[in-house]
Figure 1: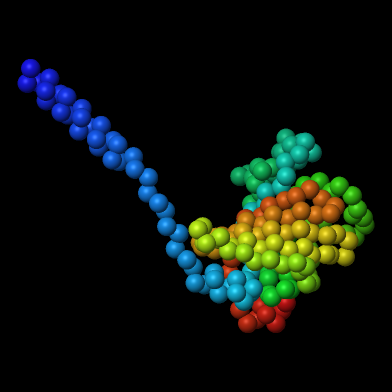
Figure 2 (figure 1 turned 135 degrees about the vertical axis):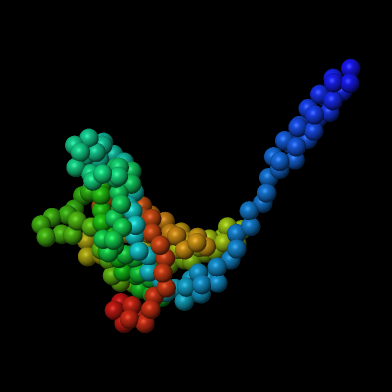
Length: 189
């Protein structure tokens, strides 16, 4: 009898421990003053680390051909160290990005295969999600032959996700790191 009481007591303690240990903790996201300053000034650069193209049947055929470097998939292509960037300085935006995907129309001889633009952004909106401490930039920009619709999300850890839709191509997403623009970068843009 005593062992049965002791067994029930141990089982009760185990259940209490499990229920107390399963409590959820609310994750508090700390604000990043450096990020807040960059967003107020609209002065930053994103160094692109990877590209995530829209997966289509044609990209699936590329993947099956074996021409992608090791470690890459059609869903994520590593471009670290290739110098691809997006710069924002006020309402001026410039970018030199790779493109992996299907062109729906346009193009031609001597046209860039990547995504390149340099000019004034139209309808730029910067919003902050106070609960997640994350910024969203939304704008459109034109190049010589295409219109781009750009959505940039930046977290407090200074990582970014940029989605670009084009008037001539399938959408593509880029993952990168956000840095402050320094004086030389202001002059170069």
